[in-house]
Amino acid sequence: MEYITVKTTDFRPRLTELLDRVEKGDTQVILKRYGRARAALISFDDLFRIWDAVAEEVDGPVDPKTGRNVGQDHPEVKQQLAQEQADREAYRALGQDERWNSFWSWVKSLHERR
Image 1 (cartoon, rainbow, N blue to C red):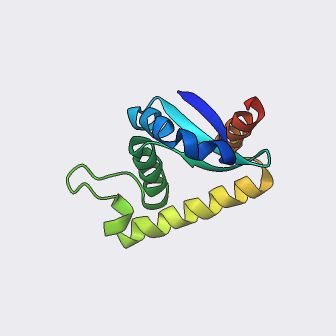
Image 2 (image 1 turned 180 degrees about the vertical axis):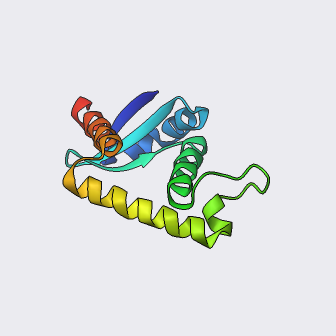
Image 3 (image 1 turned 60 degrees about the vertical axis):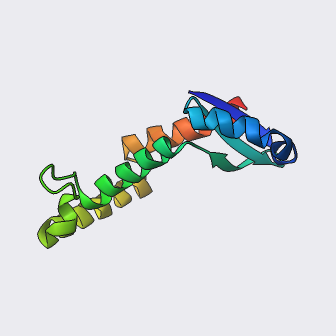
C-alpha cells in the first residue's frame, strides 16, 4: 500500500489524479496542513474493513446464520462485550494493551515517514 502525503494547498489541483489512485485501492492519501496530518482519503473497501472491525469489537463476531453481530441480538452477549470493552479501555489507559500500542506505533510511523 502506497501512502501519498499532500499539502492542502497542493490538493485541489491534484484531486482527480489522487481520487483515481485511491479508487484503485493501492494508495491512501494523507492531507497535511502546517506539517500535521489533518485528513485522509481512503477507498470504500478500506472504510468498510474499518467499520467491520469496529462493529466486531463492539458487538462481537458476525453470526453466519443471520449475518448480524452476535451482540446485536443477545443482550447478555452485549453486556459481556461491554465489560470486555471496559477492560480494554482500562488496559489502554495503563499502556498495557499490546494491540493498541502497536496500532498507534504504526500510525505514528506514517507521520514520521512523510
